[in-house]
Amino acid sequence: MKVLLIIPAHNEAENLPALISGIRTREHSYDAVVIDDASSDKTAYVAARHGVPVLRLAANLGIGGAVQTGFKYAAFKGYDIAVQFDGDGQHDPACIETIVGPVRRGEADCVIGSRYMRGRSDTDYETPLLRRIGMYFSSGMLFLATGVHVTDTTSGFRALSRPAFEFFARAYPVDHPEAEALLMLHQKKFHILEVPVKMRGRVRGESLFTFTKALLYPLRVIIGFIGLLLNKQV
Image (tube, rainbow, N blue to C red; front, side, top):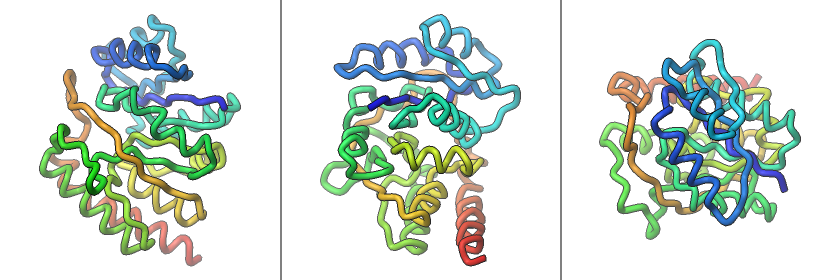
C-alpha cells in the first residue's frame, strides 16, 4: 500500500533536515510532501534540496488549509494511506508504522498517535499547561457529542485510510482542526482508533499555538462542534 507523509510546515527550515533524515533511515520507506504554508524562511528550499516535493501556498492558510492541501495531493496521486506528520520535529519517525499498521490491516480509518493513553502515556513529553487544558476540554466536548473517548484530541500525528482522507480533501476544518475533524469522521461512521506513541519537544523555532490562541481555543471548539451538529440535523 502506498503511504504518503503530509508535512505541513511554516518557517520550519531549521527542523526539516533532521526530520527528513529520520524518515529516510527507518526500516519502512515512505513518500513525503512538504506543504510550505507561506513561510518567510527557506522552508521550501530546504525541503527541495533534500529531495522532497514541495507544495507552496501563496497565502498562510494555517494548519487546516495546509493539511487539506496534502490530502488533495494524496488523493490525486493515488495514495492508499495519508499520514499527518508535523514539520516541527515533534513526531518520532520510529512511530510511523505504529499508526500506519492498523490502517494497513483494515482495523481503522483514522489512527491517532496518543501521548496520554492510560497506562501507556508518554511520561517523557511535557505538555504546556494551557495546551493540556485545551486537550481535556476538546476531549470532553467530543465525548459529549459522540460518546467516543479520545485521550489526545489535539494530536496531529494521524494516519488515514483513502476513504477518510478523500473525505477530508473535500471538507476539512480550517483552524485547529484536530478535534473537529474527529467529530466529522464519527458523523460519517469512520472507525477511529488510538495507539500510544512517543513524541519529542520542539528544539528549534516557535510554536504557532500562542498564548492568545490557547485562550480562544475552547471557544473555537464550541463553535466548530455546534456548526457540525446543526449541519447534520439540516
